[in-house]
Image: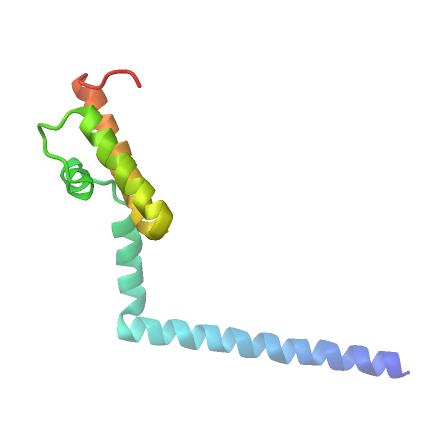
Length: 115
């Protein structure tokens, strides 16, 4: 008898809790839409998924269009190691993406020697 009562209380409690969570989630979405937070978050996701341009990659690594692939690698190694030791993972990943972008550009030009 007591087990049946406890089971009923658990089922009723979880139903009430589930409805409350759903109601709170809906209210949070409603508030986000009113303030524009949801729109801003979607823009940030879209902005973050775009490919890095060659110009942006050169700015991150601090190299010019006349720089050789060896100079690019040297800058990459320096910045990557510096951020690995005392920098941020975000900056380290930006440096890595910049190297990947320039690697593709140098391969297109045919100026990159095999590494």
